[in-house]
Length: 151
Image (cartoon, rainbow, N blue to C red; front, side):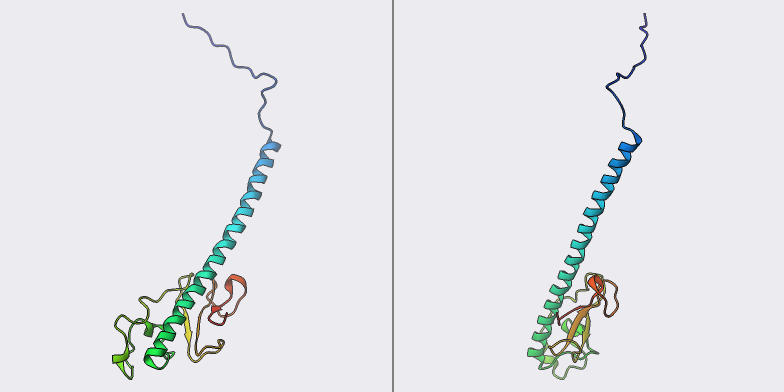
């Protein structure tokens, strides 16, 4: 014999959520997500700036070693590549160390090569080494600002 099931009925104390309650929860989740996203993006920009500064410091040290060994800085035409491979127009190629002054040229945190100007236009050093920031354009503010050895 098959027992007939009676339909389930809600007890008056068992209620669902109203549309207003659901909308309030969705709004609160969206607000919290925005706060978290703003803080995470700010930390990312800060990390990119610090990475660029660290890479510029490494390039500066390599340029100083180049200057000590070669008695001059690379020309603007030779560029930073002179830190990795000896330029063809070196007056005394025997002074160039095997393996170069740096193993590999880093790109800035936005994937572009660092810029090199010799003689310097902005720095108190003999040269400028810099990244053009997030926008890849000279100048700018905040994450788009140039980051260089003059900072």
